[in-house]
Image (tube, rainbow, N blue to C red; front, side, top):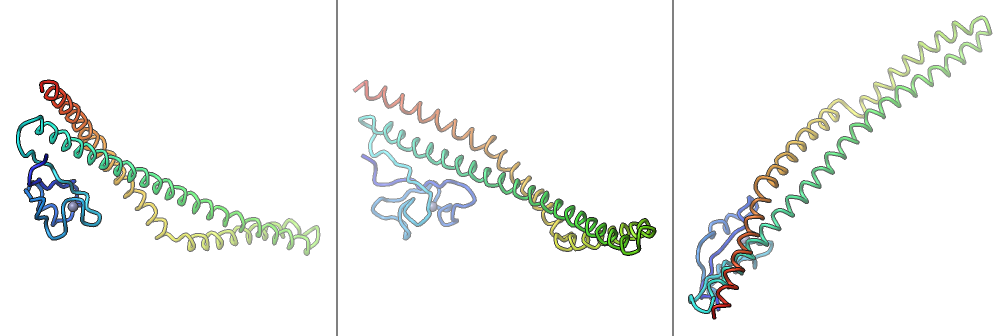
Length: 216
Ligand SMILES: [Zn+2]
């Protein structure tokens, strides 16, 4: 029922290989495909063949239009699904980075606390060895040592987490946030409206086809 030719159609996004993008809108013979095959045949190819009616009788034109509209609707659904999946994975990445930043904060705090605790143990030790009279002095030294020790451990904590890592994490957070905004915008302003438009077209074309068939 379809003609001898079809029109090459691409999904039209930036992942379409340039060779196929160059074929968009061009006619090909079913008997003479390009070297790598008909649309959808090359590995990973998401292109499709827009059918062309052979003659304009027996509702054939409407039937072809319906097939083409369904193909477009399918592509629009796929594009939306893919974008929504990407959005989900970006949101997960964002959460992971946030919890990593939180974890590093906690690690530093733990290092500081460990230092203070060790310092107070040392201080108590010094206080006891110097006898009851010296205990106040000992405790004072201990607190001093403790806070120094805490500082040292804090520095160790810093060097483990590293300012650069911190900066890198915060930078990735900003970058991912931007990516999330971009893709959310694309879903809202482009992919969903296109899907709705294609749904409407497919419905209208089905009505036309029904009308044509009932006339016969
Ligand atoms: Zn392709």
